Amino acid sequence: MSLSNLRGRVAFIFTERDFDVDQIVGVKNIKLRDPAELAAVAMKAYDPDFAAQVRPGDLLVGADNFGYGHPHYPPMIAMRHLGIRGVIAESFSPGYWRGEIAMGFPQVACPGILGFVQRWDEIEVDWDTSRIINHTRGASIGIEPLALADRQMLESGGIVGYLHARERDEVQA
Amino acid sequence: MGFTITEKILARASGRSHVCAGDEVKARPDFVVAYDFPGYTDVIFRQMKDEFGIERVPDPERHVLFIDHMVPAVTPQEEDLHQNTRDWGAANGVPVHERKGIGHQVAAELGYATPGAFVVHFDGHISQLGTFGALAIGVRRHLLEAYVKDSILIKVPATTRVELTGTLRPGVMARDVFHHMVRVLGPASCRFQVLEIGGPALAGLSIDARQTITCLAMFTGAITAIINPDEVTLPYARERARLSIDPLYSDPDAVYAARHSIDISDLEPIVVVPPSPANTRDLSDHLGIEVQIGYLGSCASGRIEDLRAAAQVLRGRTIRPGFQLHVVPTSQEIMRQAAEEGLLTDLIAAGAFVTSPSCDYCFGRLGVMTAGQRAVSTGTLNVRGRMGSPDSEIFIVNAAAVAAAAIEGRIADPRKYL
Image (cartoon, rainbow over all chains, first blue to last red; front, top):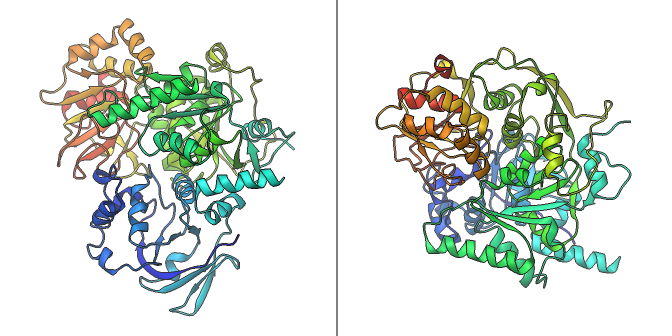
């Protein structure tokens, strides 16, 4: 299996270090389960027009240690419902990273990303060359390659698909 | 070449002679621990059956479940979740411990913190089993792997070693030590690594104190924390251990990603100001801020040492009228001991609202704040809205400082009451 490149616009840049993703929906909404309800409350504190402007395929950009604190799943459930296809950050907090990779949601560690993009730039994550191309500005920057298990998890669409793939591999072995 | 305790535990758990940081291995968890929570255990139970056709876990002895959130239930849906957990436990032969306290603490009391064991949970605060030389990692939804497979695929983490030196001064507690570590090392310093704590200061840090420190490892970016077993922890852990495993220890020439030394002798009480656990400050710079609520409890704090400190501050005094002081011992065993020592009497006499163990005060399900209110708290986290309204604020301090604030209705230095 291979991973498809991510291509889309930078829909938002979270410039805050140690960003707590729960703030995307607000902690008071963290118990909501319905993706549409979550999407309706997402980003209100950051950009009330976010939902109207975002398009399927768009990407988010974050700073160092993105996902710090006690990350929960609803914020990115909301983001996926709005069409966001992945998150690129300077670096990630491991609990957040592990949680979202297990959901099959691409996360890309890219030291230097904050200085490399501006909001609404059209960018592309090329997994095979481990680079991000900024089509708006005609430049590219390296990303940290995925660990094998993380890559398999994304290729399988998340933890359930990954475990099925592991079972198939073990049967073949 | 030497190895860290983490590498040795994962070598044992993966059946290899040795592993090194960076290796990806299939490791068999000795214990699979969880509390019931919507979106985690209910989903895992369903996926196990529907996606993988597994009716019963083949090895129930390595599984354990706790009911510690939403205790007591306040809606029928919450009780449904708990009943589903009890039914699943009964059908699978898996013990379900309910109303015994916060699971991360009760797990240690029941011997799941076996030195040398590899433990997984979905929740990262399970790191506190590292107090006893177990490697305990919160893997979030990856926990499904431990329910449907014998082993889980894991990348052996590198380790940052922190040597603690010196002796704490009166009124300064483990909570201050941990948040000082975040201040010195940084909230991203140990990302994807294990935080190994050692050094001569450990001799003066009790099991309670160590559980506080290891519980909070995630706020340095670490995936867990671990302490090599010693004469403080081994008697407790061995007496309860559920598995016969030889304790493992880091070699003197183990390879670390980084080494740091932190002297705790001159440490002063700290406050972690809202809205991030990265915001460690000196308590002395924030004295006098009005607070209306105090929370003494959680999986990080709320043990006998914390209750003793609060009782010492409050003995013979009364809390300020209108102040809400919630005291929630971390487990029933701790609460019973506090009763025997007379601590509960002291706390109640001072005006504290003492309740049975539950996780619910920590995450804003009980004791909820409204807009404009402020709390001093020994809970795990101080992000916006964690304990109620997004327009309330949480200041994390040690247990003695929670008690001192309850007397004054303001952030206060506990040392004048000791």
